[in-house]
Length: 337
Image 1: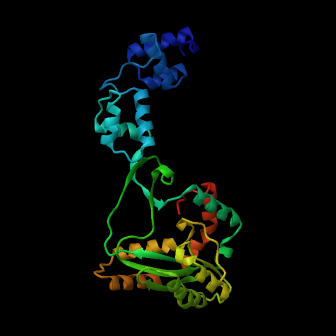
Image 2 (image 1 turned 180 degrees about the vertical axis):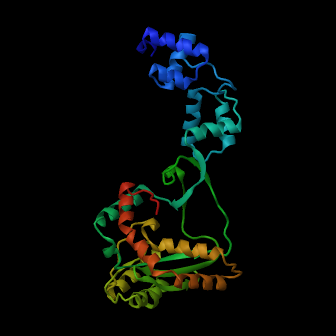
Image 3 (image 1 turned 90 degrees about the vertical axis):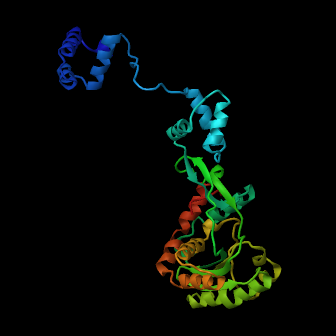
């Protein structure tokens, strides 16, 4: 760097430095930036380009030790700071909790609440990918002819159940940052509902475990009437998931005898069913109202269901092409939906 200046310039630099002329004026006189001037002056004083020793406590760990910590955290996303500290101490790094937290933060790793998603196997991923590819050219107009149905369970009392993982931004749907879930469990109210581009259909409370005969009753007295209520007549596709009672022989026979056209739905795919977003809306509405028993809970849910705006349903159906593309991009894996 000093070789870029003439002898006269370097002499002028030293004179200005000795006279205490401000850095900006000196740099302007030399025709260089302040950064270049500082580099020249450091070389003149120390005959080296190396940074001068800084004040403050020296960094406790080396770059190699930091990489070891980061690799361990990435391989064990749910490990807490005390666990990481114990592991780090095994390579003779005596660091405090705050030091470990700073090193992880420098690497972009922060403790965040893990997303909960259904457990996906390789078979599930492939079936999801096949479905998304088969419907990649469907527009929202095509999806608007689908009657979406599902069951969901709402409990009287909910626990937090949070699990923290250490991850970077935009890693929330990576396999190692997900908490797999299974359907249902606990006490409360189970409901069946239907929705479409034209709004919500009927809702039914399910007593006990739903079997094939109970599901046929829902199809006959709630699903088909919902389609008629929404103005579809017989011109629609019926969508439900792969619950055993949905796929029994007697249910398939009833659908065939009643000309009910159904979509072949991929397993473990609530992110592709827009009615799941309405269940979430109901869960939020429920939190703001105290319900001491299951009867009142169902009344709250039923009222909230009937008050869902049609525009909300339309926005969700319009997202279906994006959902297909998200599954394809994730190669059948988790999506943000």
